[in-house]
Length: 366
Image 1: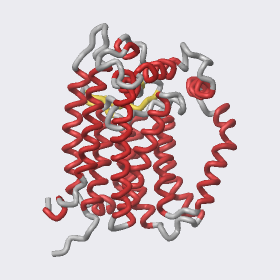
Image 2: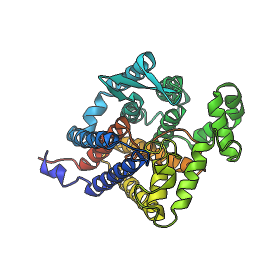
Image 3: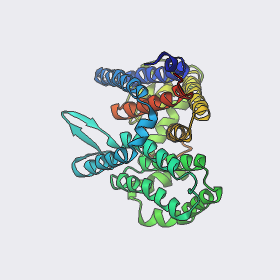
Image 4: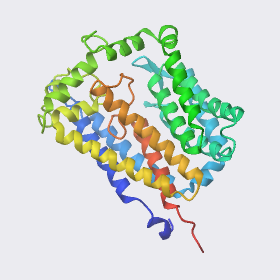
């Protein structure tokens, strides 16, 4: 790699995401340690995925992001193929048909599709930047994202579909869309909400929304996850119970402790100190990403990093929000912390892309 590019690498961003990932492995270790007998398998797998993901990020950094953008149609088509493949041969977990098993390893292709859509949508918006407020062009952009969203909804993965919408909104806002279009979008969502709730949501999705609005409605059923999560985080107080000592975690009261509710593990066992440390690291990560978006040498780079920021921000707010009961449960992971190789890999590829943009903020003169 050219030394003039290396000097532009954001090592603070790299340090932040690696520290978050390391904390995630520690929390996964505790979550899978449970008092009635646990296994080191999850920790080992997550560690292997971490090394593989870091290597992938550095590989992505070497390829000029504008070169990737030139193949945006191929990247987009590839993401659609992966989502279709999931529908055809995928297996179900927690009500969502999101996983494809290959050679004994499960992959969630929708995680990879997020990054692919950011790359391809960024290029499309860059091409159409002077026409974005033309209603016909805007409809084509909405259809561009709408197709993968519909395929993911077909998988019964509402949480991931919402991530795609968050990415779209963030990127079209930076692309220069008239703010009234966004206001109209939210107004339509509010007006159509009751119809969607009654006719399009499944029973378990309705229960999640109802228990979010009324936490005491079904503490032992649909609201059990959040009820136990709030006990865990609240009981952690300032310094927590200590690793491997949290009652809700170690006695299996907290469901999905290593995945969706990993922040609850941190809250109970490391307390306020651990929780605020995680939040501070996320703030540093997002702050550095915003800086990269602002100093990008071109609109495409800025759009790509904006999509990455939108993706991470939605994941963080939604995941942590649901653990403390201020957001409905959607089952999306906490970036770099939740157990899962597909998510970790996609997140590091996204970071690699952001670093790629930051490295090339100045044209190399020969």
